Length: 263
Ligand code: ADP
Image (cartoon, rainbow, N blue to C red; front, side):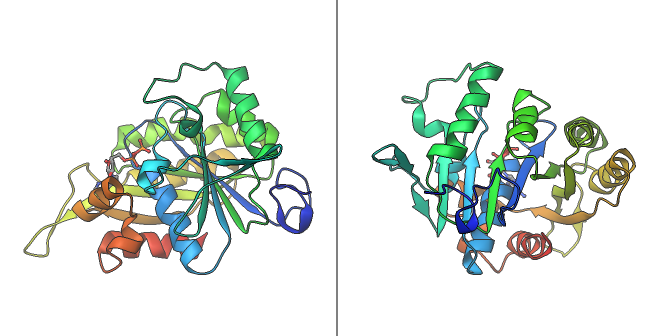
């Protein structure tokens, strides 16, 4: 068997045709997981074969954002991931009892990620997303070791302070030789009933971050898009149906669709 990668080449091996995106952020709560699930659903809806590894040990939220309640199934020594909206999902949260906090250390995380990449049968995938824990933890280094071809997507809010923290997360890519695929700015503004935009978290953080990361990795890092604040994005998450599917007419869903088209 060739778990993971396309045409039998595991996606952590050279020659794999699976595009791997590690979604990172400087801190929690900026919408990293929401961006991950929406991009995954948008690409799956276009007919791509998509998987998500939720490696955010301390804040695993992908299963609930995707409305997944069923555990993975086991066949012999293989773990079959549950599927939602055409996306195969495996999460650390599926291996934790109840809502217990996870206090794992680096080596355990490394092993868990390694196991996800080898024992979970994703079949052939076009795109695999990794939802990383916020910050610059051991897991980012594990990703670099286990999936050297992974590209980093950095999610930030428009706040300058948030962009600075995110820069540290992105800088690890330079140190480990990974490519930064781009920056996604989330919570960019709130559209007012009169059509105006309220910039609740300031502005310019995404652009600033893209520029700074570009300087660090010495190549062009694009700002892939700016996603507005939208109640329906939050509601979609709470209901387990990502906004790109639940409310595709919203500006937030459209921004996410545009980003999906760019990666
Ligand atoms: P992270 O993964 O960075 O911790 P989440 O994706 O879990 O962040 O988002 C944190 C909270 O903010 C969630 O309740 C989510 O629904 C909400 N949220 C994220 N982005 C937006 C947005 N653009 N508009 C409205 N709510 C959002």
